[in-house]
Amino acid sequence: MEDSWDFEFLSRVADSCLSFISEFVDDWLANDMRVSIFKILLSWLIFSLIAIHFAWKVYGNTVNDMYYRQGAGQNGGTPEAASHLGGWVSEAGDPMKSHHD
Image 1 (cartoon, rainbow, N blue to C red):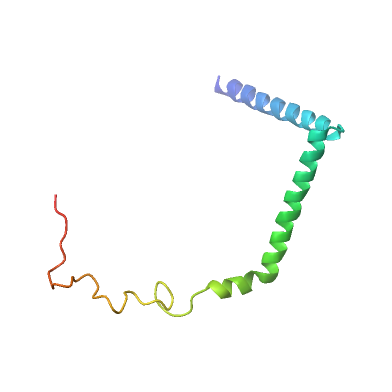
Image 2 (image 1 turned 90 degrees about the vertical axis):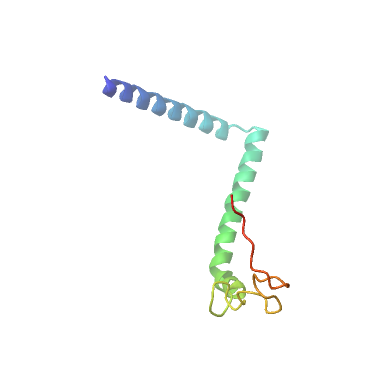
């Protein structure tokens, strides 16, 4: 029984995909204004993605080196705490307070 349901489901999915593709091809071949705008926007998107890909191949290492922090530690050369602050100890020398439920 499950096999017939799976076959019916796959058949419906395949039919809907084929009908969508046939309608898309019919619209694509039509000389309609919305199709022309879609073609222009699609070509612009593809051109932009290709340009970004090639620009990253050429300049990617340079950009990475500009923003890569040199040095050891979690944040590169940045110190873990500011030197003029005493860390978690307050000015009065009181121990750090914590919240208890």
